[in-house]
Length: 262
Image (tube, rainbow, N blue to C red; front, side, top):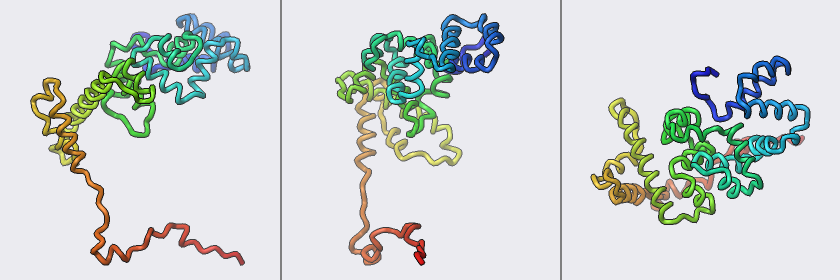
């Protein structure tokens, strides 16, 4: 990593340790002289872990298990961290007995706190672009982290607490939804003249009046409500004989297979 550039990934210390573990111990220790104390300690843990003695470093061992084996809990820990929660709050919410495990996890695998007020860096290393862009429905971690970042740790804690949200949290969620949709609409507008198909909801978003631009939500809610009200589930017309004669289901590939038991 270039010394004059910020880290390019949240787990940069662990990545550095993995790189150094490819060297002999003597060569690695020489290179470790330029690293900070958390990186040197992580290297010692990695060496012990490779020998099956990771429990000599209980904080690192717990953080490593969270990173490697506790995916669902890990996503929520990272969500709380990126939302601005401290170690004590995150440890309590995740039933982690020692808050220092959260501190160790952050330093080793999700180093983002120094960049929480540096949006360009945070967006590049965590979201791969602007947080309201590049999301994918199957990217659970990316979606949760984006949500946590946008609404803050108080609202995020309420959200993961069974979704029982206060009025303030509901307001935060509405504001976030409006901001994300408006930003995506603005981005899509650049391709409008290039023949790109634009989603139908964009037309509804354009119905938002000037009140929404001043922070009000009436225009936004009306446009969204209108859009969903016009969605309808249709069924085949029963008066059309062709529909009545269709099979209950289409044949599957297995239905065409002929099994010869002889």
